[in-house]
Image (tube, rainbow, N blue to C red; front, side, top):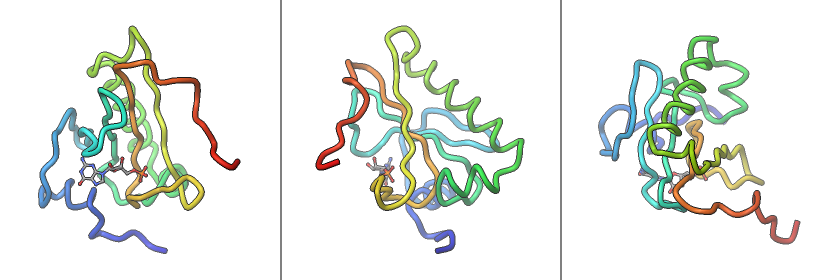
Amino acid sequence: MGYDSQNIFAKIIRNEVPCDKVYENDHVLAFRDINPQAPNHVLVIPKGSYISMEDFSENGSDLEITEFWRAVGQVARMIGGVSDGYRILANHGRDAHQEVFHFHVHIFSGCDLGHMIKIQNG
Ligand code: 5GP
């Protein structure tokens, strides 16, 4: 399956769909999730066309990868997650229930996030 340029995050990057922007630079965009699972729930995405962590880690340039992970840390600081804690998460593929096929990292903060994740029927 190739990259679908009509996915919702590609449309957000092209300003065809609005977002609640938190941070942006030449390589990265961060915005609030439309269906937040914590008081602060921000998505960080590279502007390049990568399907998931698998694609990005394999095909992203050194510059894109560096800029991306620096931005994840910066956004976590911006939303106040450093003192009390935060969680990052990236879904790849079926078993992880990836819904949007443009690579993204979720950042959660602002409450007790519980202990890791609960696997049902796992
Ligand atoms: P995934 O399961 O792919 O890791 O999560 C995709 C995330 O994208 C979900 O948390 C969902 O709420 C979020 N999302 C889907 N469509 C939109 C949208 O149009 N705008 C924003 N801001 N978030 C979206």
